[in-house]
Image (cartoon, rainbow over all chains, first blue to last red; front, side, top):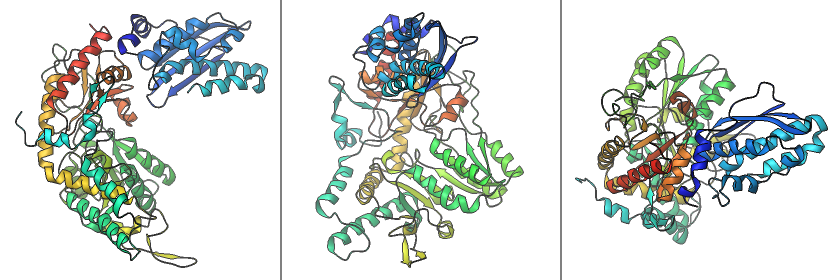
Length: 145
Length: 435
């Protein structure tokens, strides 16, 4: 995958003009993670209501891929039910980014936001429905990379 | 180019430089501050040991062991000559990090007390910060920083309309007032400072620092982290006058897994061992033991024999070229690189724009392109650079950036490679549609 393919207009647009960037006043969960190898950083604020993602914001710093991916993810999950977002996988993110074949050196950049989001869903469910209900989500998050 | 060394002949000694990467691109290796490539003389020396005289050293009486011991101790003698030390002042460890940890554990634990100050600088690598944080916490000592004079106001940004000239020539040097102040007001037991920054390229005035510590300190010891300097310039530990000097083989054409701690003989004598075990003892009884002579007192267990021998070959290689010649050649490369970087629009260099007083390490950011994205684009052109925090997060904080891109050069790099690197930066500007 050449960098002309990676850095298409849409990725650069989300990098420079991120949607849903910022913080929420009273989120149900705030979750943050970093990629220690390169220092990418993503924090998400999520508000749930009636079993749905009511509102979500992200902030952080990092490369175009990590930040565009976080921004696109917030759009993907906004208004979706917990069941729907629990099913989100690696490939969903990579395809939305238009980077289905991203190489090993950069795939973590693309998946950091999904990991953070899953950890957010995990902590929301664990708090309300117990650890056993949520354990598999945490597992999935840790297996992303 | 006027040159004091024959770069083409040098390049021919490095098989890897003939490699093609990323669909047939000629490799341009600009990640030498992380690790350097190895000439075939080094690879052959390691191969030859395993093929022809592999044996454990020091105690056996058979011929192979004799040969291996001679080669291993021969490498120590070469290293000692290389830095103007005595052989018994050269301790082999795994890397510069381990050398610094050896000092922190074996010297620091016995000598640092509650209320003492350990002084480092804002430009240190994590390897010269974290061991002191651990020691300071354990002992209730204070860890303090000598600041750098970076102003963060574009004094060293390049390529802007008005950024090319004036000011910023010394950006990224140490504020030595902080050293004077600490020595006058506190019980500074140790100053641990890098000789050359792995991010800014700044060469610090370690001779002056040692002199100030001798004048104003009360028995203040000085450790010099030479991981980035020993590969690139002549080192004379007697001239520097430091108490400890640490460096790594793999950053100077040698193999990974070998580092050196130099320390003055009387200091090593006074120190307890760091790691206990075989080879570091004179006698062992059931409940106590006595220590071997220097430097073996600090080399417990079977050492990295093959790679120490390989390091010996690397020292031979560097010595044959001459460290003065290497420094002079890299100075030329640095001048050329700085002149080319000046023309790249939107490029911000972290460190001095003057070739004197710095090495061929260039940290920068280009417009709003994140270093990882930039490194991906350059990699596509066959150019290996590094992006990230370079194990110097406190420095990144000081510079106010999350990460930088870093190109670091060595004796086998050329002006033509710099040209291709600059072209690739321009390509990155296009891909990112930077105006």
